Length: 173
Image (cartoon, rainbow, N blue to C red; front, side):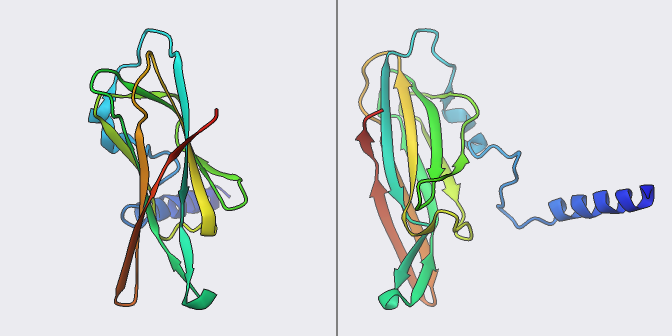
């Protein structure tokens, strides 16, 4: 029995070692590449709060609805303030039915003035469906300009390349 458990553990480890390049594991922090964009959390109370809704598309229909084209989605969040950090308290990804697919923050993070972060949803990740969206909650210690939040969707089908942009809009919180 112990040999069987050891074999199962080895198979699991081998699977982790041969994961496709760029694949996210459950423990990988998608914001880790942007560590230089982070600031210390502000000590003052976070009095200004906002929410941005961003429609995105992990798939679109083409050819009169006969062909589905899958897209990679890159969500970008830009702090437009020159002086204050932007605190991100929520980055949630929803599918077409409005169900949460993934929560990207375990705790709030502060983005330094003019700093930016990104979240990438791989082209092979079609959990969002035809009309997915992100909801981003943000805060600051004082009134700041609204962050620039947008997504770029990119794909190719045959020899044809496709890309388009979606801009977030502020909604009530």
